[in-house]
Image (tube, rainbow, N blue to C red; front, side, top):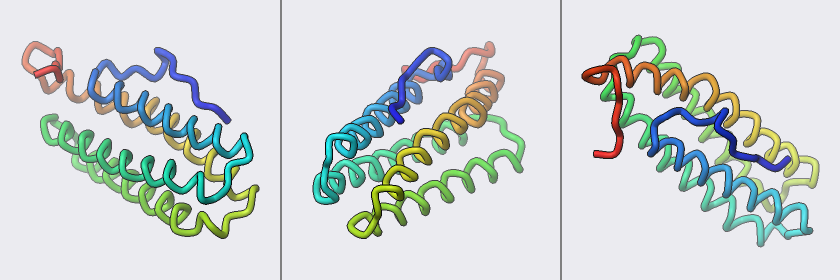
Length: 143
């Protein structure tokens, strides 16, 4: 399943939106490699790049969360979601040489569905909290 960026996914936080677009692009590169008969050896560097970028992206989000007034439970749940996602993706990456085609398809579907849901629900909520926490109600991440 290819991942197409649309304004539906825009959070209004330029840094986060650009990083989300980079994640979409990398997931699509992984999808395209797989669909074009890519071997595990060809998929591995793309998945490795994705796992590294995910960690970078989550650190960015978590840094922004530290600037917002967040409900304590919400913050903990967001961190837990990041951790759970990271563990699952790392597990897929570690097992990549042994994954069946069906498992690679499960990985691709999981990436798309999890990220879609996370952006549309959790990250949009983060953007709202950041806006409410910013002076004048407008968060500007271009500083």
